[in-house]
Image (cartoon, one colour):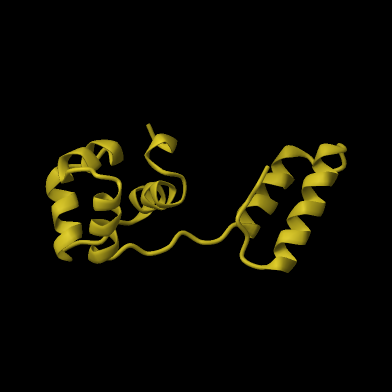
Length: 105
């Protein structure tokens, strides 16, 4: 499994843990903890970033809302700065940013 880590040290730790998991020395639950500790945190999305991402993906506000399973008015409020995405929406925006639209469809 390829992960984007916080640092080179954590990347080395994660790679070692992955090898130990593959060989059966670390169980699935412990490996999931290593995954969670080593992954980079999800970035914050402000109005500018949300709009830039939507435009880069060539989506309307309604289409982006549909992809994120939220309302068009919520996306509109994100883009004018009245609200900020959080939780699952922020994670989905991060996935869209890193992996593209196909990753969430």
